[in-house]
Length: 611
Image (cartoon, rainbow, N blue to C red; front, side, top):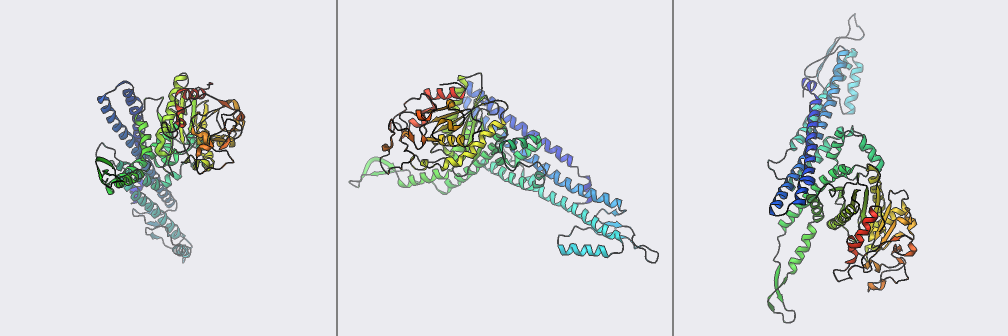
């Protein structure tokens, strides 16, 4: 790059282009929201039939296109800002060197050479002659730099050293601009969509690649922006975010969606936008991996004739699943990874019925068993916010059931108290134990969840746009997570606690939860197998778990006193007995708290009433 080109470079033109791309990104985001939560929601609420299904299918494709445009245009905006920043820095260095050259009476050639005047101590009545310093750059080798300094100090004309420095500075600026041009050109060329209207899994993996590329290239630009707080506290995060301009917020969302989506204290809309990008990227990558697995592992023949084990002969007309197919099916399910859960989350967005039940993805990652935090309704504006912590067996793949629980409670609360809005959150922000009589007997999972849940609840309170009635709802092992969190954080912004199907909450009395015993509510169905929880000092018998059925006069459970007992000192509410074990699965009653009287009573508590 030559001097004239860099002098004529106008960073403002690229910054204006960046603003244009950001405006398109914002419009695409607004359009996606309108398609999902107004147009499609209106059709779902009013129309039925094949024509409606077909229209909704096309609208889903349109929504995906808008989301893709939103994400890619935001990246283009950040890339242009980054390019303008790098080139602007090089231009300022050039302009400063040219100004210094003019002040030193030096002339700069079009090639970057510097002509310096005569000067220095006269010899025989004549000052040392001037000359021309060829284009150069600052030496990076210490030895070369030392030799340059020595030559400048020994030269009789002091302008020689000045010209040498000026030539190096000019060369450095031109080299920096050249490097910026070479760095950004491929990044900007990569931000080009396929020439079709289908946003495929491959497109979203390209988005991830584009994001990585822009993030790496824009380190200088991003480094100039206000940095997130090191402590990462919800209040610190909120203050940092509010201090950013809309342009800066967009740039962080574009290149750091995983970090922004996980920041407690930020607005729900920002976290949702970030996490939906992370979700689409992760889902697409998982889908491509699964497709590749299917290609490499064709499905074997599923059914084979049944062989009578007594006679060793084939039973005519009788077929059974082959062992080969069973092994394949088990491996296939494993190959899907967290796809089922990711598709369930996306399905929730695809079936929104309006703003009241609009989902917000407040957290998402695929670490360990996978984590997701989904709010039905906007927790930043709702009058009531309930955060539900699921228990044993919870994984990302099973998140659909947890979201359904959150939705059922939100809908019931809105109907019960239509004058006040309710947001209902399914918080799977921890690795839950997976077996009732194994992992669930260890408190380490709850211990690890205390701080994440505390930060999340504090963040919801911080980002809320007014006063809020907050309820923490724990189910099964989730009641231990909720109990330990409340026990260890007296200032936790929680007004009410609901504990259902609890094996204990880590305390002996409701007052130890720090919100007042009259606001701690518990219930356990008569036929819930959580009643088999062993006492805290007991050990699990290798056989006959029924031996742990609690006696009527024994209120100790796995983790402290039974929250429904008089000794615990809290409040109780009525729930149905629930189905008997093995009548419809092993633990049907354990999952029946989101129906009937139980759901009604929980909705009353969430909306500030009493069951």
